[in-house]
Amino acid sequence: MSSSMESSYLPATTESLAQAQEAKDASESISILYRVIQDPSSSADALRTKEVAITNLTNYLTKENRAEELRNLLTQLRPFFAVIPKAKTAKIVRGIIDAVAKIPGTSDLQISLCKEMVEWTRAEKRTFLRQRVEARLAALLLENQEYTEALTLLTSLIKEVRRLDDKLLLVDIDLLESKLHFSLRNLPKAKASLTAARTAANAIYVPPAQQGTIDLQSGILHAEEKDYKTAYSYFFEAFEAFSALEDPKAIFSLKYMLLCKIMVNQADDVAGIISSKAGLKYLGPDVDAMKAVADAYSKRSLKYFETALRDYKSQLEEDPIVHRHLSSLYDTLLEQNLCRLIEPYSRVEIAHIAEMIELPIDHVEKKLSQMIVDKKFAGTLDQGAGCLIIFEDSKTEEIFPATLETISNVGKVVDSLYVRSAKIMA
Image (cartoon, rainbow, N blue to C red; front, side):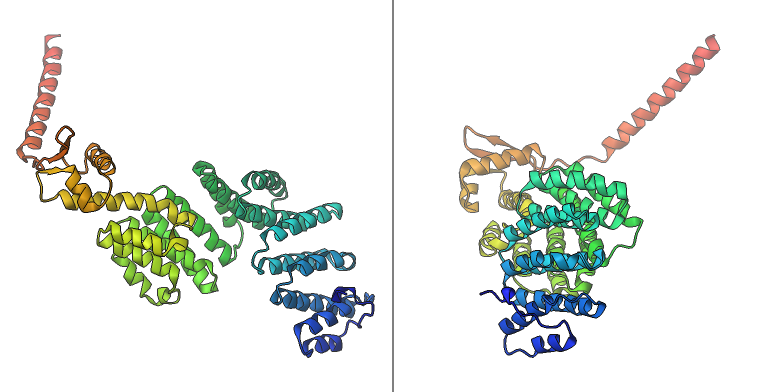
């Protein structure tokens, strides 16, 4: 029989709580706390003690990874919620949902739990709590890549919260909407939602963690637009905020800071940032992955780059933000490698370049033609002979611009004289 089904209850007193703490193992403590919660007394002291018992029980169940029991606990506590203030109910419900989130592999359970709580709060007309649980549900759906359902939920929730002018919740929801549109590759809407979140945040005090999240999202959007310098400053702000709070998101901010340095051709700065006092706190596979990419970039080595991708697959390719920029980084590296290889030649076989860079001939030929069109170097492809012909950079004579400027000025003088003569003749 489950410990929650104990028939005898214990009085909701501090002695019962002490008894639970002194129990020989977690299972016994959980059993005692369940019995304390079942005390029918509704005096002020008993209610206070039961609140502490619920918090302790939630902690024990989380440590024991009993996610299903936490879900059942929320259902069992519904009669108790009827006799305590709504604000305390909201605190307990959100605390239990947060506790389930700490248990690994429970995303589906969290979604169904949130859906149950939304239905209950709607039936009980607890609008404040319902809106927060719905925001949590939208975040979980976004994590699960159920974008359509998340967007439908957010669209109706934003309208409702805007009417109530709940700024703090509005910041959360606008941020969520920005992340959702970014995942759907709709950059204009992602930026619009982020601007709305910033506008709402400017009107109130925003907790540092939330401000850090806003800065992190701003950095991600700027990086997507290839404005890496601005993105770096936002990631730095986010990193400082999360680092002060010892939030695990700090490592992602640091990782994206390093990515920005690499993308603006300042890969040599990466080692300095990592060895700084703030960077040393976060040494680990994520930082090592970015260091490996920076080293490959500094050495202009495609081979090292591919080795880094293979060795740190989960940190690089499985991180959607980093992965978005890796292809353009690979292209840049490929261009740098090709430029280095063709430097000594005025005419070279494409097959020879392909052999040196260890890539297929058609891939190299296509990239070289793209580089010529983009004016990365002056040259032409002789496809009949399978050769690349490189032209010398024609240096512009300094006299040419000066001559053009003189001719332009003479033209202006002639025009002015013509206008004057026309006036005299008239």
